[in-house]
Image (tube, rainbow, N blue to C red; front, side, top):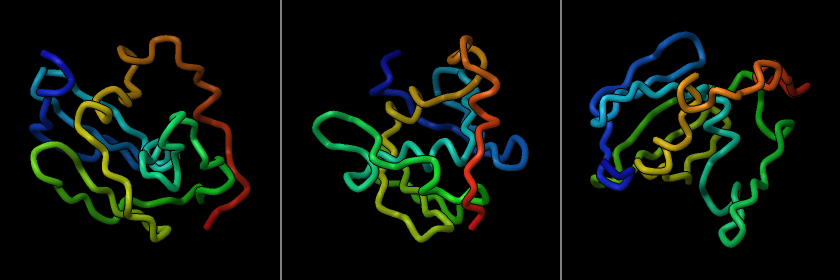
Length: 121
């Protein structure tokens, strides 16, 4: 099944600050919400031509919250953040590729999740 046809079937909190999505391909996606905010696909956060992230870790509060999730047609989710940001549309295929579970990121550096920003709010 290509990532273009994958749809979310269920969403739930896995633990504090970690969101889960059950995908139609059977995968259980794991998404730390701060990671999602740091990788927002909108033009203000990600360069449209190069894909380079414009947002730096210090730009996003450590205590970021996901206030709302809104479906956009049958292709994306719009995430509303506690820092007021709400312009990122997370296309299902891209969101599925952003999964941070151990299967999708087996070489993930555990210390990378521990890096902190000094900005709390």
